[in-house]
Image (cartoon, rainbow, N blue to C red; front, side):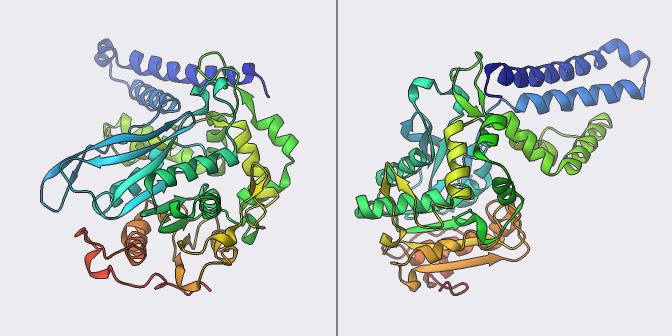
Length: 435
C-alpha cells in the first residue's frame, strides 16, 4: 500500500461521500419538494446533512473554541493562543488570558500524537485555565509537512519535548496524556543528564504505555501479533499530490479512523442512526452532544511513517522504555538519573487502552528518585477518556493534580482559583503509597 495511488483513492472516497451527502441534502431541500410532503425526502435530507458534515470533518483541523474565561474578578477575559516555539512538526503554544496576572502554576500539557489533534485536550485546557498558565504541544498534520523538513520519529519527538521544557524553565509542571507518557519520561531523563537545571518541577503521567506488557489490552495484543513488515506494508502510504507533504510516507489519518471506528462499530453505527433520525424530526441542534463529539473524533491527522513504526517497534515490541534501554542518537537515556522531579501516576480502573499497571511501571524505573517524590492514583470506574477530560478528571483527578503541583512548587501557591486554596499544602504522596 506504500503508494500515492492508495492514499489518493482514500481521499477520493472521502471526497465522494462528502459530495453525495451535499447533493442529497440540496436535492431534498428544494422548495418545490415541500409541496408534496414525504417522509422519505426528510430522511434523505437528514442523511445528506449528517453525511456531508461527517466526511467534511475528516480533513478539517478543529479550532480550540476557547474565546474567553471568567476569572475570579467576575470579568470575562479574552483568551488567545500564542506560539512560543514554531517547528516543522509541532509548535509550543500558550493560552494567554488578557488582563490577568500570570498564574504561579506553569503547566505544559503534552498532547498525544496518535491520530487526533491537540484539540482533543480542549476540555483539559479549559479546566486548567482558571488556575494555571497553560502551554500545550500542538502537533502538525504530516501530510502538510514537505519532505524537505526531514524525518520525525520517537527520538525527534523526545528532543522536541526536551526543547519545550528548556524554553519554559525549571518552574514548569508537565502533564502528559496517553501516548506521549513514556517519551515525556524519556525527555525528562535526557535533560537530567544533559541540562539538569532545565528539568520540570513535576511530572503527572496519565494513562500511558510505559510498560505495555504490564497489563495486556487489545492494543498491545495487536502490536505483538503483527510483524513490522506487515505493518509497513498494510498501514503506510505515500501522501498524494493534493497536499504540501506530497511523497512523504505516512500512516494516514483516514486509515487510523477506520481502525478507531471498527473497535466499536455497532456503537458508532447506532449513534449516526440516532442523529439522522433527530435531524429528520427537527430535534437536532448545531452543538448537540453528537456533533460536539464527532466533530473532534472524526478530525484526524496523518502521522509520519517513521514515528508510527518506531513507536510500535521500540515502545511496544522491544519495550525499550520499560527495560530502561531507550537511546537517542546512540546515547542511552537513563531514568535512574531523575532524582529531583516529583512524579505522579494517574490511571483509570476501566481503561481499555492503557490498562492499569502500564503507566504505574514508570515508578519502578525511577531508581534514583526518593519515594517521597512519587505518587500514584487509580481512579475507580474511570475509562481512558474520563481520566483526562471526563467527569472523573473534573471532579476527582484535577484537584489531586493541582494539589500535587502545589506540593512540589518552589514556594506556596498564591492562586485563588476554585478547589485549590484549602488543599495547597497537602503532601505529594497523599494518594496510594507508590513504593
